[in-house]
Image (cartoon, rainbow over all chains, first blue to last red; front, side, top):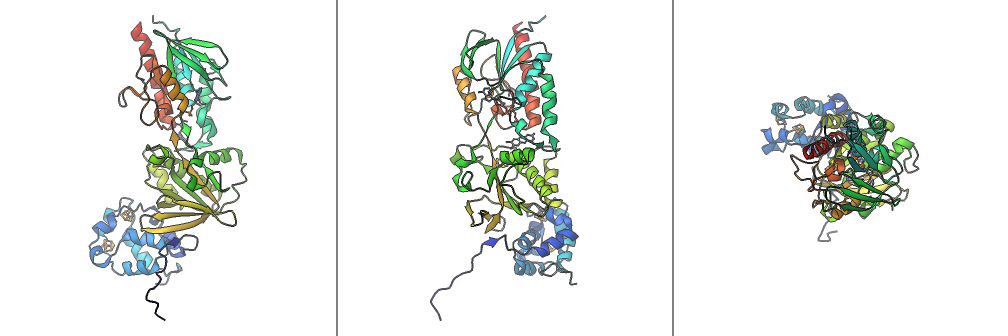
Length: 112
Length: 340
Ligand SMILES: Cc1cc2nc3c(=O)[nH]c(=O)nc-3n(C[C@H](O)[C@H](O)[C@H](O)COP(=O)(O)OP(=O)(O)OC[C@H]3O[C@@H](n4cnc5c(N)ncnc54)[C@H](O)[C@@H]3O)c2cc1C
Ligand code: SF4
Ligand code: SF4
Ligand code: SF4
């Protein structure tokens, strides 16, 4: 039935129920993933960012906020050029981080 | 030979007062420590381990106690009135006696912000909401029914600091690093707990502080969420539900916690303001005592013969307080030398 309006799902993130298995596994394999300070240097330097929305910062945050679909969409826009690794002030090997992440499924299992 | 017998009233026997008195005594003066509390040591005596090296607070206090063992120390003593004479100050003490001195050193420290004033955080209302001071006391005593094997712990930065509505626009400076220290200590104590820090900015200015932060992230997996908790509610099982905006993702977040620790800030001590007024010493807009010059003469007041050391002029760390106390002792020494 059409009521003439629809309810939008809440955009609130409930940290009690967020599944962070994929992030936890990533943090085991690339511990530096934990040290991101959200400075945005990676996204600012990324050539793909403007066209595909790729952002290492948002990927890391999205993984901890249960936004898997958005994360995978962003990852698919990365061309692995490695520019982001050159600028990260925390020295995170972001390119390796992206590659590692692409091999993990939602549950954090190594599938590739 | 300079006259080294002048009496110096040191008001407050926290680490600032103790260090200054010990240096003044070593220089040959007669400091008198006036302490309101039944014990010396001030706030540091309430803490357990100190950032950035996790030094036991005891280790800082012991040498100060040794250095002041021979200094006349009046405990449980307040000042009822203080009068300025020509070159001297006369203090009427709470026991009715009076003390005539040739210089006064304020080492009256700070007050911890009363967290129950921020009602939205529920301190004094919800059982599982405690303060940074309560947590230090738990580290010392291990006795607090509110801390019972928590599985989720949150820390709220800037409670009563950087808050115009609370009357304190200033940053308390030590609470970001204290939150990180306490978060690490809680994770060590309860390794399975998820620990969240809700911050507005992280201000980690001091030597080794950033290293501490990186360790909290990488080695302890503390979650840092940029956003100020807007409200705290109690769930049916006594746990607390907190809401904030994760400003980095622009989304509201909600989490249920077994313990919420409020990082109460450093605010001025109203006693110091009152004494200052009685002898015409300037008080700053933030309520702390006002130095003659914030760059070059931080230990000088607006009046000759009256000096400051430590947190009575604003938030200070332990090394800053101790350095200032030594500097104040030297300023007092120079003051008497210049008068011949
Ligand atoms: C939660 C917390 C944790 C901290 N942890 C650390 C840390 O780990 N490392 C670090 O470097 N710094 C730390 N600090 C900062 C540290 O506590 C201060 O640097 C230090 O206490 C300043 O010493 P003070 O002597 O100036 O003041 P205080 O410690 O406040 O001492 C003032 C003294 O004056 C007395 N007094 C006050 N009014 C009167 C009066 N009217 N008459 C007589 N006596 C009076 C008081 O009773 C007290 O003994 C922390 C601060 C907080 C809030
Ligand atoms: S590696 Fe990917 S995310 Fe990094 S700069 Fe290149 S395209 Fe952007
Ligand atoms: S550059 Fe590094 S620290 Fe900055 S947001 Fe990107 S990954 Fe995080
Ligand atoms: S030190 Fe940190 S927690 Fe304390 S008032 Fe400043 S910004 Fe807030």
